[in-house]
Length: 203
Image (spheres, rainbow, N blue to C red):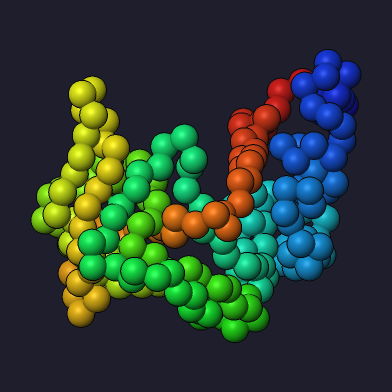
């Protein structure tokens, strides 16, 4: 704790429960389940010998606990999104109820809207070629027929057609997407790095 105290005293963290901190309060705020921590401790066993275990082990245990029940949500980066127009897509939007997780019923269900105009991430659009067949997750395959760029060479829009009879196994790109609707919700994603990256902190 005396080594971590420097971070607290110098305002590098909000407190002992900062999600980047290797404290119990910190890792719980980061998303660790108490059940995972208990299992991690029990796996070390009762011994007076020094036992060093990697962080990855703890988070692997945690993933096994939360994976079956954790809801899944789809998002695209607002500042870098690209509109894909499916010329033969549904003229009227429709909603389909699908599982949040394909393997675990405990994750629940979600309502997904299908439209002929969908958003994808710019980072995905950069990898697409003209006439390439791609997979739209939870929908099926589509073939991109046209890639529209601005004068600076930035992709501004894609045009394609559905190819739902196509095989998911044959496509290189599996794309997450969102329907262009007024129901989309803006959110902020906060990704925490680690303050301490060394295996051993010197005095």
